[in-house]
Length: 208
Image 1 (cartoon, rainbow, N blue to C red):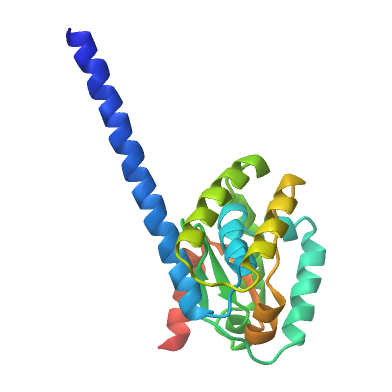
Image 2: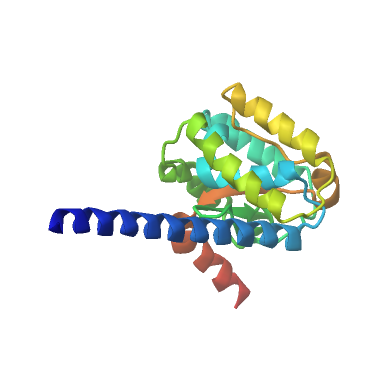
């Protein structure tokens, strides 16, 4: 009898924990989506996807060659004069990384080498996950986005493009053309710990 009661209690506890986790996930995803749509109202599903996959995979896909990454960053720095958006904004629903605007280098708030070193070291903050695991998570995220009825343009074609990519075992996505044209994004992905401990104090110091 006692054993049956314990099993029943354990099952109820598992159900309660599972329900609580679902609510927390749902709330965190909605908050992340609302944050992006408020800052970038012309975002599409592609742009939302990019935000969430960056939160999961960080900058790893663009740092396979540090020399090339450094050369590309310098070329990008020289190719623009102004940028849209916040100096730094958290990615996705977990906030594992920040998108840090390159203007912090141009404005002298953070030295180039300090920024680049932080960018390279941010790879260490990536928790390994397979594309199949990520696809399951993205499907949950996309279902929540769909339920929010945001009337995002080209939603179905974007969803299919993302699904096809994931089915091929590829996870990297890109900003939509309308996002690129409207907001001219220039940033790098920095791990949350490195940004908050090393870069954020430099930004705050320069603002005083």
